[in-house]
Amino acid sequence: MTAARLGEAISAGEVSSVDATRAYLDQISRVDGEINAFLHVDEDAALAQARAVDERRAAGEELGPLAGVPVAHKDVFTTTDMPTTAASKILEGWQPPYDATVTARLRAAGMVILGKTNMDEFAMGSSTENSAFGVSHNPWDVSRIPGGSSGGSSAAVAAFEAPVATGTDTGGSIRQPAAVCGLVGAKPTYGGSSRYGLIAFASSLDTPGPIARNVLDAALLHEAFSGHDPRDATSVDAPVPPVVEAARRADVAGLRVGVVRELSGEGYHPGVLARFNETVETLESLGAKVVEVSCPSFTTALSAYYLIAPSECSSNLARFDAMRYGLRVGDDGTRSAEEVMSLTRAEGFGPEVKRRIMLGTYALSSGYYDAYYGSAQQVRTLIKRDFEAAFENVDVLVSPTTPTTAFPIGERADDPMAMYLADLCTIPTNLAGNAALSVPAGLSPDDNLPVGVQIMAPVLADDRAYRVGAALEAARNDTWGGTDLISKSPYSPQAG
Image (cartoon, helix red, strand yellow):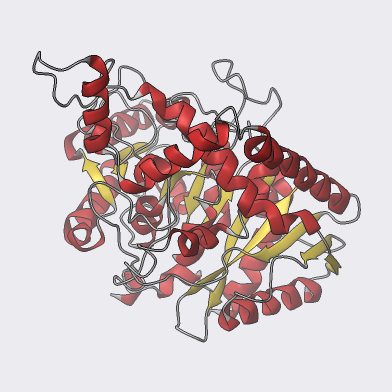
């Protein structure tokens, strides 16, 4: 069942939350040894949460549409009842004293948290290969990456270990794993979902969002944990856009769609471009008006991002100093605080985290601040202006979500620049702060792996992206035999 259908079934008494939760726990037990989507699973706690929902239903309490539905939770959100590690040795075993706002809202919605999912350490990566606890595997082909940094969440949903999952998107870390796993992934408007209790990577970019098998499920989860939070200084004090209504509407007639010229061409796999071009044709056949749009500053987005994000990470990760919490190495009474701090960071941080801290610290140094960080922020302004100019003429923008399909594990491990290119299409939206959604566009004829198409919408117009995504999904499902793409994956119950 989809999350929406499962919620309806639980509400109607067709199935209990306990039975649904036990079914997903059984699937985790069967397949996660191969997938490695989860870092922590608490069966007893999950079943207790499910039992509480069933008891509230039996007592006649009115609950929300996702009450009793299980969810996989990215291990970057604090949870009082489970460890939160951000997939780093420096936080191994750390038990937070408070819940993140997203966590608290999942609980308030009556959702059952199955466990915490694997990720690139501190959300720094595009493949989940940077996890201190082992790489997750793509259920479509376990020799390939499931994307990142939310790769554990995408792998869990694609392997039917959870109906929906949470993720965070700093430079594409929800949309890219969703695309390569044949799923739907959304980056809400920056500030539309709370960062309180989210272990920070880059504070001006980090955005919690949903990963799901279809657009409606993503919209329901988006609505469940989003909205203003006075504990987050960057939270937008505005209503959550009507994403669920838009997902149910699924209509693009009369909408103006812009195809971004700069997000295609050289470096993109032919199979990815073929599926994207088919998607554009589908939009036209559904009544949308499609035009080409130029956003020239997008070509510099990758360079700007890899100055801004590391600079913010070098500041945010300074708190991991071996003095306050987490790992402490070498504190035997003979070493200074500086030596203990150095030894702890050397052992606790992985290579990619160290690389970005060093890059960011260099960019912020007194002799280079204006030349690097300052210039990157100027480029960020130009990117925002490109979006604003484009949205004066079109309602949404579209592009491939990623230039390629899922690449083999280890292929780019020693080539950081090749790894960074996986986020080429998604980064502009993070720098500008507007909304974006990735939906499946089919399988690439090159390797029979999933391809995603990205729909970008203005700030606080998230519903436009859902409206277009749902229309594409409905049209594609007809092509795929009346079912969603992920139902054709090797781990789906339909595939046996």
